[in-house]
Length: 303
Image (cartoon, rainbow, N blue to C red; front, side):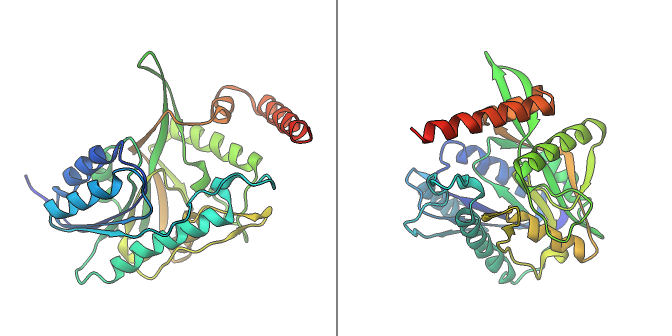
């Protein structure tokens, strides 16, 4: 087999993901076999399951695997607070994610080897398309700064797939560029609808930012970047996704970013009822249901 003449680094965060981790490791090993040189760095913290053991065994049995494991004794996703801030978008969580991601950025900058591309992957996903990554990475050069995965959530009934929806809307920033990016529940829903419609019409969608569980980066576009925490200006107890400031800097440097429909990542069916409503109901009905749920929750909290 002729290998792709590119040198790549694969970076990941890991915590309590032993259920699918062996499968993702197998896919990463398959992906690596296609390149002339590759290295993997995984930042692991505070796992309570077998994640640490699986990762350390992977490091022991394979060349070019670096596992950086440390326990901090803190939660990455905080418990629900009384102020109504969702834990997944809290400043606390994004601050932690930023710290962990900058750990692999620091490691990559210290690698004494020429690097063409960096692949950032979530290892708690269900699967990803190796072929989709290979097709994308050959395009991620020149003025292409990043290619993001088409992260999808699959719903099944009796093992029959009846729906696929775009999942990682929190990391998406569509054009036009704004002075300060911010989000609301409504804006997230509008972005979700926009991306779903564009994926029906195009294999590649030009965006400022996305992620989808896997991103291929042109290393020249990110060599001097770090992740940072940016407040959500619509609610300063929240923070925007850490991928958005990072990817925005790529655009500011003159590169272009895309979502690739072919680079598919499967998250599985662990999505919320809100995603179901957003897919099947018109916007006005969704907003009515959402408002009703908020009111009912508020009444319940007053009891």
